[in-house]
Length: 217
Image 1 (cartoon, rainbow, N blue to C red):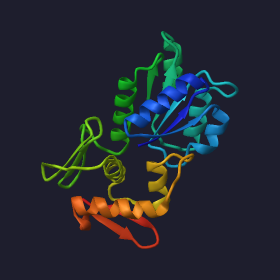
Image 2 (image 1 turned 90 degrees about the horizontal axis):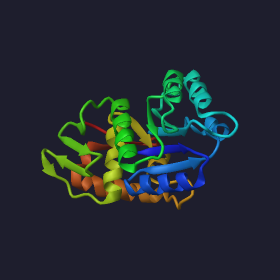
Image 3 (image 1 turned 30 degrees about the horizontal axis):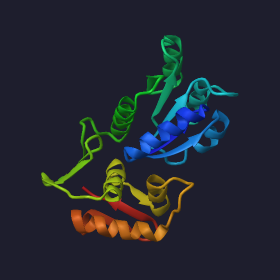
Image 4 (image 1 turned 45 degrees about the horizontal axis):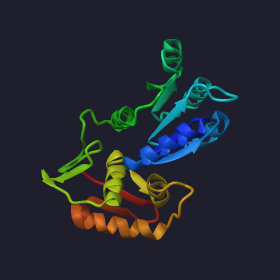
């Protein structure tokens, strides 16, 4: 999962980025709505937006993104007890809210729920044929048999399952697995795909020549 966090509180943001990373997510952090407005459409699984941002508010950011038909699930951060902010944010187009101070377990659970619904999965598992993956527990199965995956293989399979039947470019996979401010080796993606193929079946991940990869059911 690739998450965009828009939060001007440096201490809170750094803690959230560390916690989301620890839970297997790739998290990019911006401090203003103005910066996020031009960055938000770039292949994120979900966004976490603080309402009380400097300059443009988080609610106005949500409103503008929805006006541009950007459908990325958005979770808003609200101040304790401010039900008016919750209502205004949801009416602007946000999908969910979480109240500060943020408990990481609740944040992670809400992000998983938003991502599953956006990908059309009604249950707790992501499914494609005999493949299944539980983002919350970190477990995956092939024909009901547990899969022994590394952390990188699990994250790649999760990304493919969220986009089952769609072609993902190598750049989209790189963006989904690695933060922009880290070393990003395109050749490593080919190696990682090869390792995952050996565990789930080569035929399940098709190479779309000149485009990228696609997971089939």
